[in-house]
Amino acid sequence: MDKMKLYTHDEMLDRVVGERGTARRDALEAELQSYLIGEAIKQARKEKKLTQEQLGKLMGVQRAQVSRIENGHNLTVGTIVRAFKAMGVPAAFSFGGVSLSLC
Image (cartoon, rainbow, N blue to C red):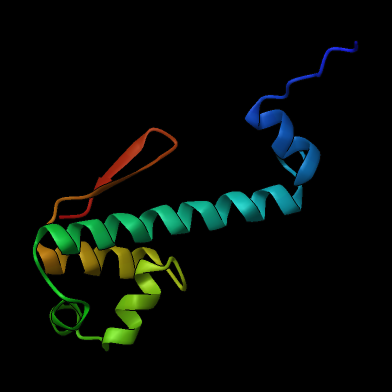
């Protein structure tokens, strides 16, 4: 009986999506990062016991825009900063060893 080969998660991503550095893999990883940032915003909103409508008013946007942000769509650094600042939640970015505090 032949042994079944087991693959790591990264090996499967390489096989299915493409190796790191390929356009398809970079797009997937960027989409994942946007999703995770949106989830962080959603989690912070829920911890502050705010509705999307309430957060939207604090940010100066419609509830639908908050929904898009939380789903990781159309995220910009400015939008991310505005969301966390509106909730009074400290956040920071780190780029190549340089850290930037948002709030």
